[in-house]
Length: 486
Image (cartoon, rainbow, N blue to C red; front, side):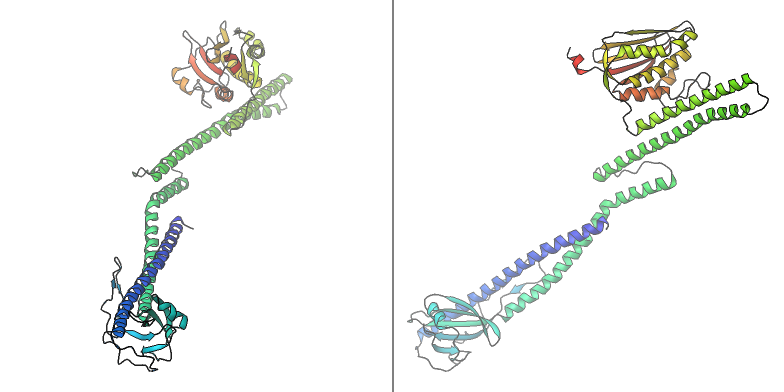
């Protein structure tokens, strides 16, 4: 269900509840007010009746019903009628100019002494009610001739237990209240309709920017043309949402672009060794190949297979890193033995290239480390340094404590990094050699792998050139707390 419709229904329900409760209270107040006004009028007429009775001769029960002796103003218009104004509504209600419909003079035991408008044989009050009314005012509702009538009974001044009873029909009041009910129902329905329409319009206006953003996002994904969302100038929650979505789309675009580039370059990197491998195998199939040629072809095929495996492992590690999977397990390790074993792995290659590998690391240096990850880091860095180091040079590996970290530096005496390459050194498939010479350059993933592993070890890495010459890679790892305490 759309939000606009839900809010419109909610506003309508709330308005309906408020209008209903208000109308019930209002009707109660109006009805009470009208009846109070009528009661006041009856009280005045009852007083007049009592005065006339007490001022004239008091007769006993006549058994007759007459209106001849009723004072002229008893059945006339109620000059004390009260008008009840209702501000804010398109109508008003007034207490009716009611006519007296019944009047009797009773003694305290309920015997009718005088009767006006009703037979004397039908007393308006019972014996107990007459006895109560002889001492204080009594107000009663009673049906007379199938019409609800309000009776007011009070003692006759100066008499010995006589009671004056006067009644007026509630028909006019009930009719007024019923008309008011109808008008309030119509008014309430109108208010509910207006509330629903206003809620619909306001919600639509508030959500219009959201609908526009949704259409823009749909167009972006449908057409594949990335663009930022239009941010409203309202500086409200919708504007903040638009900024957040724009930033999300920007990062999504960058991620997709990187993924596409990653797949494209990875495909290219895999295609090259696979093509070479295919060529070597096709040549090996020829019948005129000598044994030495076959051995050479098999060796080349093994080299290319090894390269494919290494590239696949690198791609898998980067993919796991992107997914947030754990690629290292941290343990307290002594750095010197691990670095020494890493150097031993490359001692033969270094001797063949006439390059010296020098390690400067105190055996007391301890760090939270993953030995396999550190060996892989050193393999990539030493492989790069040996590839570019001239004969007779030295590759220095230094590991030491500094005030806030364990610092590991690998520095060679080769040509160093091109200045414009340093900011891109750790990007995937980024190479310093423009022509991607297979004999000299790798896949461009080595330093990217190193950075991923260093970051997984909670470290930081940077690339620079030495003061004189050569490339330098600096890594910083956190010092264990127990080392800091000492």
